[in-house]
Image 1: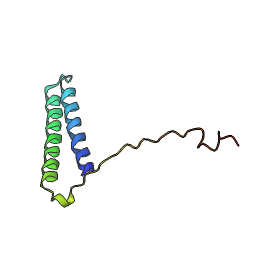
Image 2 (image 1 turned 120 degrees about the horizontal axis):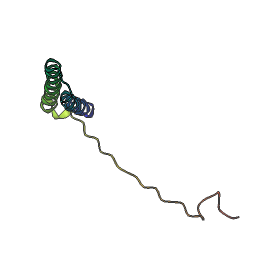
Image 3 (image 1 turned 90 degrees about the horizontal axis):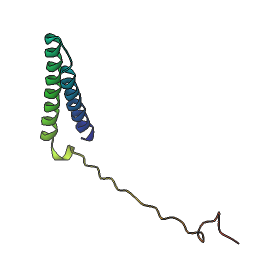
Length: 84
C-alpha cells in the first residue's frame, strides 16, 4: 500500500502546484482549465484514498524500518592494525 500512498501524495502535491500556478495566469479561461485539472487530481487522490481505506486488512502492508548501529572495531580485533 506504500505505493498507493505515494500516488495519493503525488496527486495532492501536483494539484497544489496547479493551484499555485493558476494564480500567475492572466487569461481567465486558462486559469479555469488549470483549476479544473487540480480538482481532477484531487478527485483521483480521493478515489485512491477511498480504495485504500476499503481494502481488507490482509491486503494492507506495513513496513517497519530499523536503523542498525555498528560498533567500531577496536585495534585489538582489527586484523589490519593488529600487531603480531
